[in-house]
Length: 369
Image 1 (cartoon, helix red, strand yellow):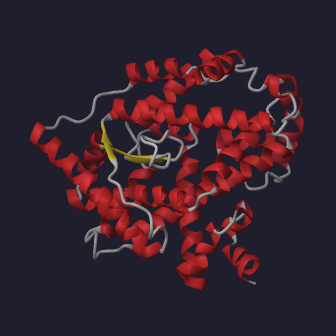
Image 2 (image 1 turned 90 degrees about the vertical axis):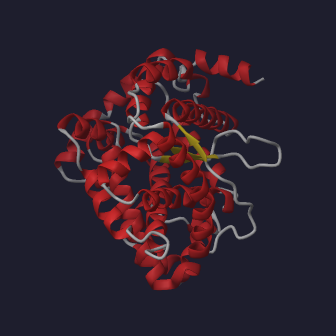
């Protein structure tokens, strides 16, 4: 059945993930030179800390006390590539199915303007770039390994973690725990909040369902978009600069609303994870302040080509997401405590809007009166 859906999707312009993986595998560079003993030590450390980290995250957040704790999967770059592509394929397929089942108009033309092979090549280039940068990832849409487990998979990319730790010149075990804290927070967010996966997939599905494949219609909106930029009415384009900001201006109101929800929840998830990894504090990660300072500089650094690629891929916008989401979380926790903050997970309409992320006091008034 899945193969039939995939075949049908390929005909309507979905991404050729086999081509994406093949392209990325050819472009993805090797990891750092490291001895077998060092590699084995890093793998064992990351597996150990992926369990311990979630215990600390639960203590700070108060989430998921009843859930089982499982270790993360330590992978190399090709391993991350295959896992990430499967998760993305699952998300896009789920999003398409949700959009069609919701009766989205023009569903038969969904993504029809995009060549599946062209999209696969583009996805492969993006995956190759990310494959040398990603330290860890919780993929909520990865298929469950067994019937008694929830979907989702926590991945820790050992060669990239080793590379970053060496570049930052920080204690190895502190850095391993710090990375695991961030990714374990993401795993807990999705596993402790049952509706979050479906909410995210539905939002992506609605965005895709509004895509009519009409280049002409999009181009017809260019003059209005240019006028909007000139008059300074570009809304919240500060969180999505450059190419993404222009894309937002070319979207229909329905597309913008769906994208706003995706950006808002993504910003919350990233910022919350950044807040938690630092809130655990020096008791668990003695060099946490040094790591945070150096890692923040590293996020903003890089050569000219690296900065251009980050901008084109939206990674600069993602860096802003971390900061904005962390500021929102910190303000709310300082105001109403962690229990009060956890109201964001109680139901979808308690999630902050994109505007409220910049004005957390407004969220506090709306949710807590």
